[in-house]
Length: 215
Image 1 (tube, rainbow, N blue to C red):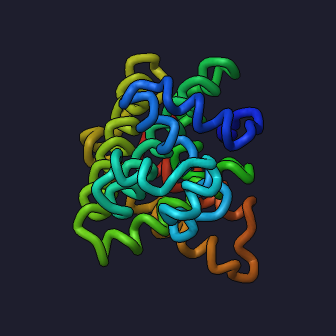
Image 2 (cartoon, rainbow, N blue to C red):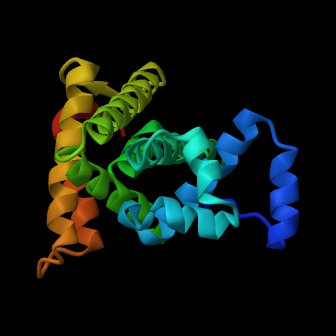
């Protein structure tokens, strides 16, 4: 899941370009810079000063658009959630993937660097959510989006005749999230004998416990 990057500009040109942007466009530009840093270095590295340095703008520009560093981190995290779900749908469409495959992608079974970056962002956001009310609300919103995306894939897969859910799809979606968070935590510990292959095998078995898959 690759982040879009902008060509390098001189500081004067960046400042000049910023002066022509609308309020919403400036807000988006700052947020995209924050997401770029979060994706490559993590949420904790996404300080106001670091963002200003990366975007080559004054710190005051950022404070005009975000009331606090927590608000900026929360919005950046939610933007990564939106981008990852949009990319999942786009990739699924381009590759002709089944809903079952895409559900697997939602559970981080794809062994790609980008997927692992998103997984790490989820973990960081969860830790921050225990300490900060703004991040807690953002994390809850991100989980809600994840849940809604899984419900959509489950309902579409059922409508397409791929599988039948053994329980209400909302409940299956919650179990998928709980399963993914737990197993991804184990995977992140680097336990011996728990490779990418085991991750996919366990996930396949879990989904079959939740769904009657039509071969």
